[in-house]
Image (cartoon, rainbow, N blue to C red; front, side, top):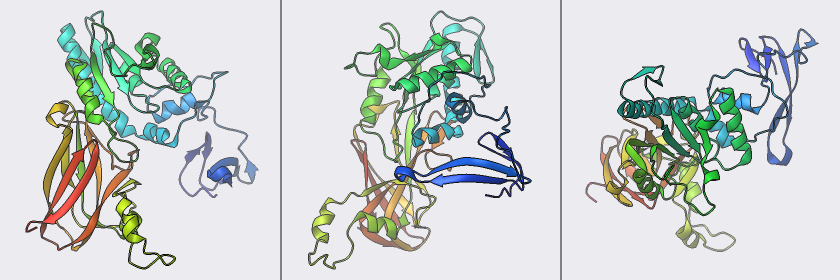
Length: 405
């Protein structure tokens, strides 16, 4: 592999224009692996001379860099590896996600600190108290998998962060990250260690205390709303102190009309031709799944027939106002003639009025989902159609009609 770009970094080595990187590419057990063999510059092997300041010494350093925690690197010995899933690495790479959470959490912590302690000053989004009370603010993160949000919260003031990670290797990695970032040991706790096996995660931090922030994992990486989200929000709402917040506070579902032959073919058996002499389509199609997940909207083969539009809004701070079943009908202007076969959808996770996370952005670690219509609908540019959106038991379904229907 010849290097044609300007100076860049590769696995701890500095490579320049004109260098050759030799890779070992193999696929054991259906997993593609690429290993650096050597770097050749001017006919000489320079791979034995790595740059000390660029070398990643262990997985804790890697997590530091991915999470944008701005740590320094110190050599350690005897540390075990922390193996993360690809989806967890993708989450750590989502800098916008972490920055938005940092700003939104800082705003809540600052507001609560002002209320409890009088005069506070704010410096670079970090709350610096002039007079601190004896009790910290309690923050609970019940995200799935490996999350560094408790560490970010612990840097924002007099906070005690609770992480719900279960695996020992994840807990060990968070402890090392906490140490490397100068976070005292009493600022980070592992919540599940303090609960009985049968206990619900959503409980008070102490008998006489409530949570200041509860972080919920609302959207699965596949693009669907997690099951029992509204029920969990209702419980979490009762565990918040006055002025406390659930993150995200609101979820807005966005979507658009598309014509996608790919989605239509993958959702049901097409045509009436017999298979091995049997007409299987009518029977098989009774059990088709209308929602496709793990989609990448930017690469999905489709023709966009409308602009993105807001479909439904879920208020997680007031979950009782949503009930467990919601239905609405949205008027959608058609911007291009075609046959509507599906409605891809994604989410804006609003942390507060200024900060939100878009699950369809290029930096997103989430994929998108799409609802495939039972019957395609032919539409013309300039007309308006009505999209019915139904949210029940954390599941989304849709219908499409013309005004006259």
